[in-house]
Image (tube, rainbow, N blue to C red; front, side, top):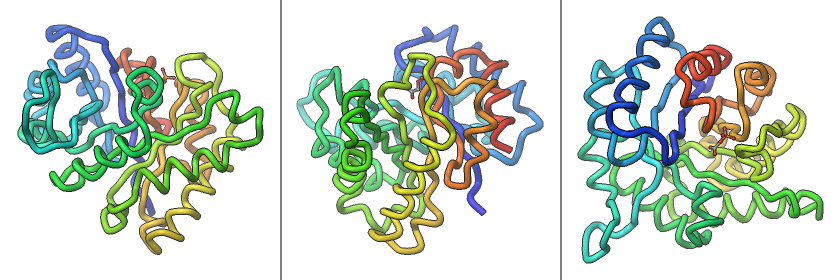
Amino acid sequence: MRRPIVAGNWKMHRTLGEATELAGEIDRALAAVAEVDVVLCPPFTALEAVRRRIADGRLRLGAQNLHWPTEGAFTGEISAAMLGDLDCSFVIVGHSERRAQFGETDRVVNRKVRAVVAAGMKPILCVGETQEQRDDGCTEKVVREQVSRGVDGVEDALIDAVIAYEPVWAIGTGRTASAAQVQEVHGLIREQIRGIAGNAGDALRIQYGGSVKPENAREIFAQPDVDGGLIGGASLDAASFAAIVEAAI
Ligand code: PGA
């Protein structure tokens, strides 16, 4: 049995005080939940404060991005070792906002995935098609390419990795993919990972992301190849996020 995993991607929201408060609220709301891995991904600036706030180890810490070299003259960037220092267990890589707004290609995404694994953390590799690609019937091709290029060279680490299927047209739009659409793509991804890394395909956890709310989470999480979610907007409200986590039990 795969253990469900729900991650909150806070994106560029919450200053230090706000982030600490939100982490505390989530911590309290989920005090009795032990069946789900819960990951908070605040902005870089709040990682240390959130780390201290959730120090009892029930909640895990994740970062939203990194730069792949170990160190060097890269003004404004953050390395894997720096995130490891802060006890980050997970790093989101290849989110569609980074692909679309910051020019991240599959090659860049793969370098980042490799850096995360090399530093002993786990990647949450985001993949997903645009509305146009779905309309053109290219969903499977696009997702397959993003997955195969994204995980190249880290086949041995896939057993611990997370892939987040996030159709771009469902992110922040209020439009959720139907449970059947989600399961179809998750099933394809799992089959693909079985082909690449054998039994790791059964262990790897696949999250759905894109307008997940307390109202739709249970039906999506009930699909056989859905192992939880990557939550944007609804992760900024402790009660909503807690309800989504509980839907994954
Ligand atoms: P959303 O974002 O839940 O606000 O749609 C999901 C994500 O971007 O990871």
